Structures are given as structure tokens and as C-alpha cells.
Length: 136
Image (cartoon, rainbow, N blue to C red; front, side, top):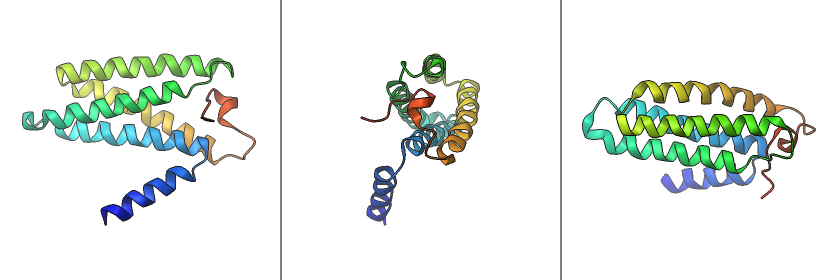
């Protein structure tokens, strides 16, 4: 069963458009933040919280690396947001602060909704036109 799930995820990634890849990244970060929030009240699960927050930071860093600063000002704004998110998650991890996790989670959920709309638009709206360079 696990192998089938892995194959499905791999196919999903390989066949996704650049916009859909961004949505998948957001969904991965959101999933990890939700798991961290569920685990944060139990001190025995602080390792789970730590791992999930680090995974979310890694995903946000990947989103930062995909930005195309030559495209427009949106890339600069997203970059600033991603820096802010990573800083909040570092603080959340150090202090095991659920409120900081919720704050980043709320922002990511809002951004994800916007990216879903973009990903579902016509082919003419390419990620490069909205500040991303996912050609590599």
C-alpha cells in the first residue's frame, strides 16, 4: 500500500504544471504545520513538532528559491513573506509556541487558495508572469 502511495505522489509531481507544483509545496507545508500543532501540547512529541517545523521551513525555503526576481515586484513581496514565515517557525520551534505556528499556517492557507486559483486558470497565466521561475 505504501509503495502505491509513493508511486501516486511521484506521478502527481512529475505530471504537475508549475502552478500545481507550488500548490503541492504549500500543501506540504500546511500539512506539516497542522501535525506540529496537533503534537505541541504533548511534551513527549516535541521531536515530532521539531521535525514538522523543520520540514515546513525547508518547503518555504524551496518556495523562496523558485522566485524569479526579474519577473515583477511580487517575487520580492513573497520573498519577504517567506523570510518572515521561516523566522516565526524558528521562534515557534525554540519556544514551542502554537500561536506562531497558527499565524504562519493561516497565511499559508490564504496564499494556497490564491495559488490554487492561479493553477486552475488558463495556460496563458504562467508562473514566470507571477514571480516564479520553476523551469529548473
